[in-house]
Length: 125
Image 1 (cartoon, rainbow, N blue to C red):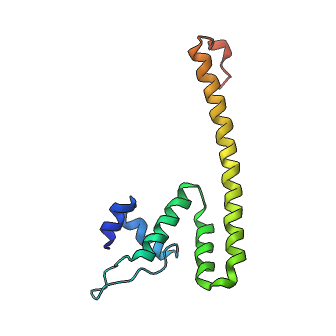
Image 2: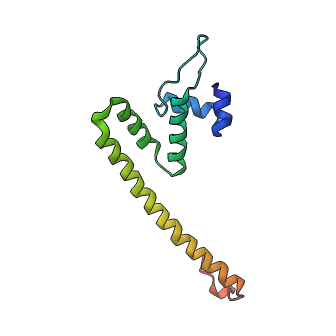
Image 3: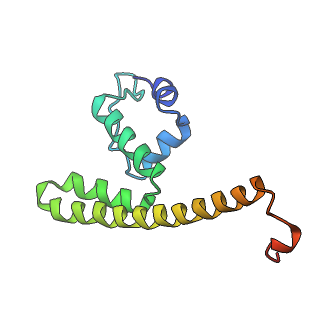
């Protein structure tokens, strides 16, 4: 698959795909006889993983470390698992913070809907 096709399929710019490859998030993408990137299934699976992890807020540095360890083989399984567990814990914390913010917003909206929100009720800026 060409970089344009992959870009369209995954909603990432060609520049982002090249950047991800350059920094090691995506292992070197195979190239055709003309030297043009020819994304295979393995490359696309890496892109899917990276996109999912980035949406979850996983830091690029953690992903770079994870991919580097993956390339080193099975002796890094424990280290890779540890990275994923740490990132999961960070995600859980962010989700808890977001839930608390959502509850507060819902409460404020409910007060407006009930006509209870008045200027005196608003916190100072």
